[in-house]
Amino acid sequence: MGEGDRVPKLAEDFDPTSLSMDPFEGFVLARIDGVMGLQEIADSTGATMDQVLAIIAKLEMEGAVEWVDPAVTRREQQRRSRRPLRDTPGRGLVRTRPAPPGASRLLYDPAELEEPDVDLDVDRRREILDTYYRLDELDHYQLLGVPRKAEKREIRDAYFRLSKLFHPDTLYGKRLGSYKGKMESVFKRLTDAYEVLGKKKKRAKYDDYLAADDRLKGIEREIEVGQELADTIEKEVRDAAESAIVMPSAPPLSEPPGPPPSKPPTPKPPPPTAPRLPAEERRRRARQLLERRLRSATTSSRPSAPSPAPESVKPPTASREDLLRGLASSLKHVAKVTGGVGRLERHLQDASDAESSGDLVGAVNALRLALALEPDNADVRGRYNDLHTRLTQELAETYQKQATYEEEQENWSAAARSWGKVSEGRPTRAEPARRAAEALLKAEGDLRKARDFAQKAVELQPRSVRNRLVLAQVFIAAQMTVSARGELEEAAKLDPKDEMVKNLLRQLK
Image 1 (cartoon, one colour):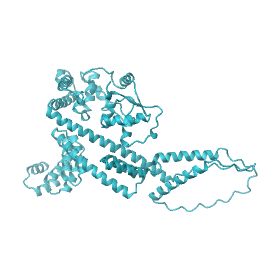
Image 2 (tube, one colour):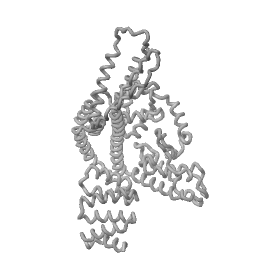
Image 3 (cartoon, helix red, strand yellow):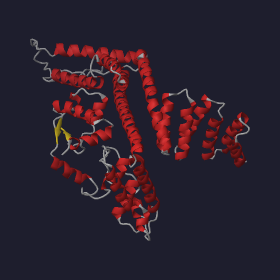
Image 4 (cartoon, rainbow, N blue to C red):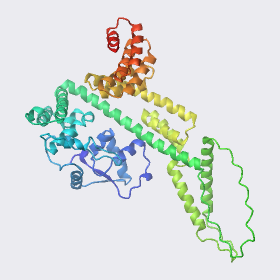
């Protein structure tokens, strides 16, 4: 059993709130389910094996992680997979990792399995559908079912084995219905994968692309987890401030029996409503109240000499205990939300340490958590905005390299996403926005996003014929002919001799 195959699980008595973890460590922790091996955890989080091993080692020292017996792990994998584990060619393509709680791994309408007049058994249909609907998320190695360090011969054998499963000609004379087109799409991707991985230079370039892609996805996941954590803290802190963290009151003392009053007491008029304080002031007072309660709870919990009470008045024996228990519960909840007094300073220090070490992602996440505690702190927000801008600018160069490679491979959906990231990091440049719109058009993707990118390019560079032409093409695809004609007429004013502009205008007329 290799290192990457070892399977960790959470200890039964493990309390997640007892550990101090950064957002990415928490993200890795969330993937520990007693089924996924270390390599699978690394793949699903975008981390390297060294990173995963370091985090698991830390959790193991804290008593949070145990190791699963290999035999138990295999039985559990068999139970969770659609079919028993066996060395069947191509089987790796149809298994999917168990989805996290609340998520769905349904790839297609189950009714597609029931398509009539198709000469394929259910297992073969499922294999085709599962592979076809996962094409966009599988890299070349995953598609062929081989490791990234596979030898050339292993890659060739996998390709020819899978070709027999997905080439429609192997089922000549049989009725395939809609499955024929799906098989052709899978076979084309298999051929592309074999062409790239079967040639040394192409494979090296692709490996560089995958390495950068893994790094970018890991960063995106880390930022996403940090954002979700910050949003949760910010909401709970806001709710706590809104409610002013009302202190639970002790139950009233019982009164001695006696005759009822002759007449009910005159009710006092309600006090005038105080004007609503600003959010920052409410949070400041809430924190002061919290600190006073911490001090008073400590003082009131010390034993003191009992004071005599009248025989006719019997104080409830558990009133003080109930009060302290309720206060402790309230303080524990608020501390869990805010991280306790001084947490803001610790987040700011974490941000400084991360920035000093060159970890902009960690610095941005730490400042985002600081903002969750102090949303109105202008200094923190300014520092966060500056670092976030630096991070997106630094990542833009890598995203541009990815986008260029994806365009070369005609992977237009991926190219559109990458160019969108470049545009985010370089908001004053028109080219990334235009190329994102062009890629979306070729991918037949979201026309609203394509329009937004194209309009941004036109706003940044209004005298560019190409920018206006792309925007007009988006409008044509959306059947907005009036808007398309307007953009083409503007483009014709800029360059009356542009043949594409003239052709499109003639088509619209």
